[in-house]
Structure formats: C-alpha cells, structure tokens
Image 1 (cartoon, rainbow, N blue to C red):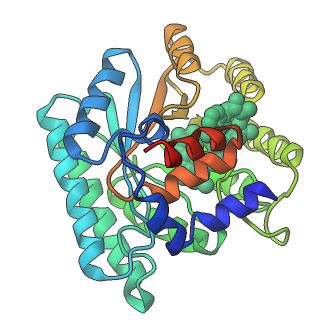
Image 2 (cartoon, helix red, strand yellow):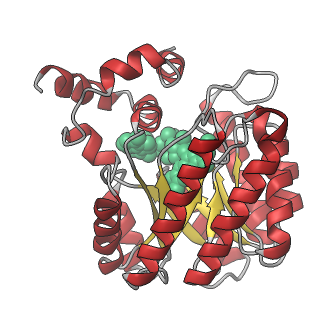
Length: 308
Ligand code: FAD
C-alpha cells in the first residue's frame, strides 16, 4: 500500500513542487543523488573509480514533453561523455539513458526522435571508449524500447539492455537477449505495474529473478546483476561458477548510496561492481522510487523536510 502510494507520488507534480524545495544538500538527497551539476557527478565518479568500482551515470530527467528538452538532455549526455573522456574516466564509467528523457513519448515522432538521440549518445560513448545502457521504464514502453535498442545495437552492439524480473514476459526476453556480446542488466523493476503484466508478491518477483539469472548466466551474453538483495547476489555468484564464468564475464550493479559496504566487499573479492550514479536537478521522481523500495528511509526524508 505504502509502496503504491509513494510510486503514485513519484508522478505527482504538486508534491514535486513542495518536495523540490528540499535543498539538494539535504542528506537524504545527497545519499542517493551525486549532485545537481556535471562537476559533482564527475567528482563522485572519480571517487568511486579510485575505490575500484565502475560507474554508470544517469543524467536525471524523465517524461520529456517537447523536442527542445529531449535535445537538451541528449546534449547533456554528449557533454558528460566528453568530460569523462577528458578526465580519463571512461575505462571505468559508462552512461545510463532513459528513452523517455530523450523523446520517446513525443507522440508519433517520439520513437524516431529517441532513436536518433540514443544513436548520437552511443556514438559519443563509442568515441570516448565507453558504452551506454538503456534503462527500462514502465511496461507500456517495453516493446518500443527493445525495438529502438535493436536498431541502435546494429551500429553499436555493446549498447546495454535492462530487463525487469517482475514482468511475466521477461524470461522470454532474457532468452532473446542472451546472445554473444549482448549486455543485459537484470533488475526486479521499480514501477507500479498491474497484475495483468507483473507478479505482485515479492517472493514471486525473486523467484522470477532467479529463473532469469539462470538463462542469462547459461547464455553467451554479459549479465549485469542489478540488485542489493543478499540472497540473489549469492545465487548469481553460484550460477556464474556453475557455468564456468570467470570474474569479469558478468558484473554486479548497485545504486549510489545503497549498500556501499557490500559494493566494496564484492570489488575486494575481484568482482566487477558498477555503481549507478544519478545526478542533475530533476531528482524528485528518482528519489521517491528509492524511498518506495525502503520505507525505513521515509522518516529520514520527513526530517529533512522539517529541519531545513
Ligand atoms: P529489494 O528487495 O528492494 O532490496 C533488497 C535489499 O537491498 C533490502 O532488503 C535492503 O537491504 C537493500 N535496499 C534495497 N533498496 C534500498 C534502498 N533504496 N535504500 C536502502 N537499502 C535498500 N528499475 C527499473 O525499473 N528500470 C531500470 O532501468 C533500473 N535500473 C537499475 C539499475 C541498477 C544498477 C539497480 C541496482 C537497480 C535498477 N532498478 C531499475 C531498480 C530495481 O528495479 C529495484 O527497484 C531496486 O534495485 C530495488 O530492488 P533490489 O533488487 O535491490 O531488491
């Protein structure tokens, strides 16, 4: 119930206005968001890379409603990639992109605009010596996102996909995408999806995650295990061993600010660990989704509203 209420709040523009008055310096925001500026994002990346972690940077923004905004966000990614290249960070850092931020929802032209913008970002990443992963959003966008990804992978095969284990369709998508060279991030899924398309019980989502992991680890692609769940992390390691995968032929991924000790522990064991680092002014929707995952964070958040 609380999770659903929070996920609806993530879309509320009225609440967004109130909450966005929380200064970005408030500890609940800085825990999950690297900052509002490019400089802060690059600095956070540098610190993580020094600690032996890899990074995927997300320029926050979703629900883009006009072409100008879509192009502006695309340009931010091009600038980010150029800066990462200049700072010598592209061996450890890639970018994550939401297609809704680069134009996917702009009516009949949306898919074309998002494809062109993703292509421009993938080219800039390629030139900088790194990669892009395309985040997955709510279930109504999945066919479109996988279609755009297939187009862009023709020129940039290293472009990563994301699949969400809470959806009934995902095992089949895992089978389709478990081919040589295919980078696939597997997560549980962060949106409020109906029972017609998604498992509603945590235990069913977890079981589906394991089935998907089995397909990806047995396949020929590059699985990216995006979870903080200790049991699933252990199962992923066991499956990698069972399938004779060497360290570096798959990776773990976690969010900035979530289980940082575990991120470092796994990296210390020689595993590849990538931290998803969001930055930018539009942090509201992202932050509320993180709170929905862990209601214990809410008290902390409310305190930051009253003590500012
Ligand atoms: P959970 O069952 O939520 O959590 C397991 C344990 O992890 C908890 O018991 C707790 O100890 C810890 N934990 C989890 N979340 C938090 C938190 N916010 N604060 C503190 N502790 C926490 N979702 C999408 O729909 N599309 C995407 O493209 C996408 N990309 C992602 C990329 C990465 C790198 C990661 C890690 C997640 C991504 N997600 C994405 C979000 C994902 O779908 C889940 O909502 C999120 O990861 C929480 O699920 P979990 O697997 O960690 O398991």
